[in-house]
Figure (cartoon, rainbow, N blue to C red):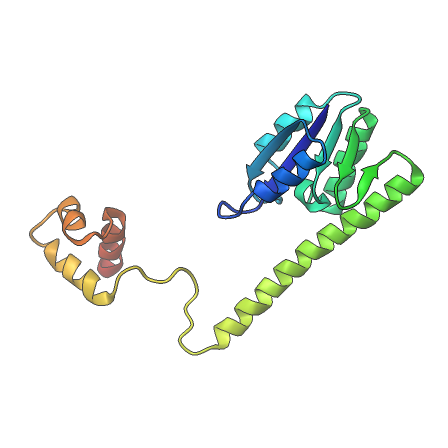
Length: 184
């Protein structure tokens, strides 16, 4: 049987293209999940690995969907090949348990890890440049202005947190956090 595995890193990303590619390549069943590849616990991947039997084929669109580090990729591929499972990476081809197949895998796994490291490095560089700009604040933008929070704090004098939350639309947890910050 041909099994496909599709993964994206974030909840806002779309799995449809990967799933379509896997089905077009002959996947009978596709496991998919939205979780970063750096997580060791990927429930759908674990279910897939448990279902794979000798003679089955595991299909992924790219190696980095399956494993993010060279060591992780090599370990999983060696284990699967040892169980008699074929691995087809759509942008590379079929991986075989041969010296050339293992060498090819090592090179591609190293490239996937290098690509991920480069993304992290570029992200950090972008953050460093942004920190130099005047008015930069790190983190999420504030949801409420100081004026809105001051008004909510005044309302807390005569009302409960739940009542003020209902009146202002500011969550109870935000009100409590603001109150604790002002007390400190």
